[in-house]
Image (tube, rainbow, N blue to C red; front, top):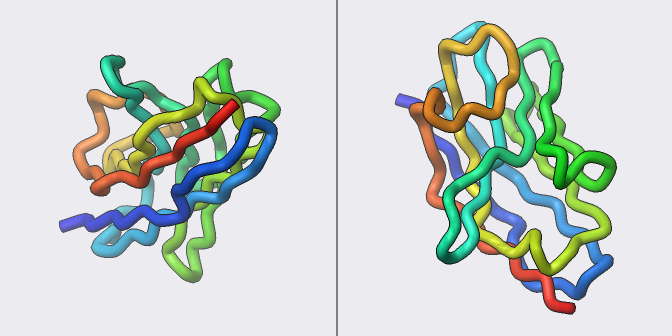
Length: 124
């Protein structure tokens, strides 16, 4: 049983920064893809950034150059550093795990484990 707990959300003004954290447990798989996804009110959930067990990453075009995903395997923590935030980044952000992935990917249908989410609000 994989458990994921997000934190670090909040309210910031456009141009500001936030760092999200996701502590995971129960992940005994040697290959995986861990990722951040988001869902804005009235919109479908979408992939933001993912990372696999060897550190390969994938980013949505909308966040490239602004967001950075990283992991601390010693502490079982996944991070999402978000810089130059825009109002359109406002959403609930979720951490997720695909424990059968060969490589990092943004296909949310293949992620079986999800956290409860943390809210990010960016004001103009």
